[in-house]
Image (cartoon, rainbow, N blue to C red; front, side):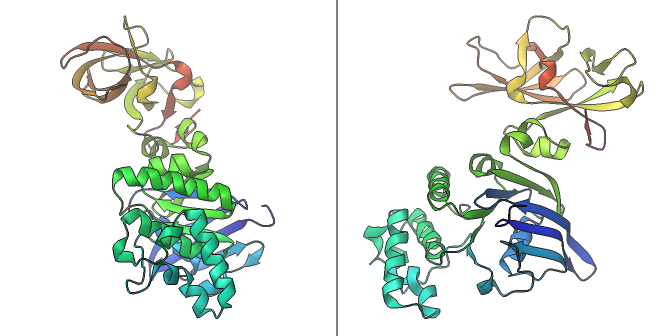
Length: 357
């Protein structure tokens, strides 16, 4: 691990007999933007709160810049946290909200003024300093909440679903603002979200969590193109990866309904009759003329989105298949298609979801 990074070693959290975080090990390089992503209840916010010192660690160690902070108060950890709720003081101006934490820490008034000015310039809220939170839009309030963290000059920024209260258009613009902020400040940032689009667009490293365990940690490209298991493959990507159940045959093909797909796997991994899950991204499915190494499917819904179209199809054995279609030819409900995924784009899993290579 880089000397100035963050390390979680065997971190565990229990509430009585209930274990919610199961021995998490993670290394974060200094200056990295790491996103914790996963479904509701996977433990991502709990893990973030443990890093912040807002939840007690049952077992394990958290180190920031080589310093064990596991048992330190939040104020001693060199972190600043931005919550889902803005938590601004409604009776104070933006200027006073930004500087309140420093004032409580008895920071010199000139230093407070300098930090508030610098943070407001970075976030482009200079013209809002004399307003109160009730006079601000949701995006402006979120900028103030982030600014309150910036003035503290923390080693690590922690974001707990900061954009979930914003509408879709504002989420996109704020996402760009946070990416720009990371580029300008260069601090380590840990960001929690259930939105995999936010994870893919913001992260240097994505940590995919499920049931209090890390399923995979890697760059957005790694987790998208080389998922460790079927959970990661299905969670990362929109629309999700197609998971088609097939039956392995002795001659190196898998049977799906009345179609046969050639399978590029070592022969000793599977026995004839074994079930295998064939994973295919919608954008990798191609409409072809014949059935050789392709799946026959009937279009159930054709979803037109302007530049592209998503075809929701049913295979001959009743499984759902989503294909991204960018050709000009019109396709209607009830049409029969042959869909082929290039062999190098296919991913294989066993019935338990483990990756087969």
